[in-house]
Length: 113
Image 1 (cartoon, rainbow, N blue to C red):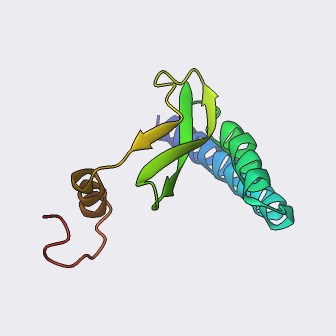
Image 2 (image 1 turned 180 degrees about the horizontal axis):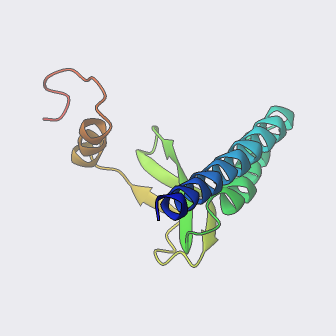
């Protein structure tokens, strides 16, 4: 019985290692393509294609770029069926502060007032 449990555990770990190897390979490929990108539009296309492969099990997803001058998140890549359909999302100060807090970034007192 112990041998079967050990074999099952080893099988699980082999699967995990294969997944991590595939993810690292995809990230390395994306890195190489990003280094060849001549402008942001090409870089966004690379990211869109790469994340589609990287998150193949996800039903849908999107990548947004923060545009500080317009205080908005602009859709740059999506995959699957994205339900929002909005190419630009406005960002509020409260929303930015919530993200700062969630990501545990350091910010000055009063930034979120």
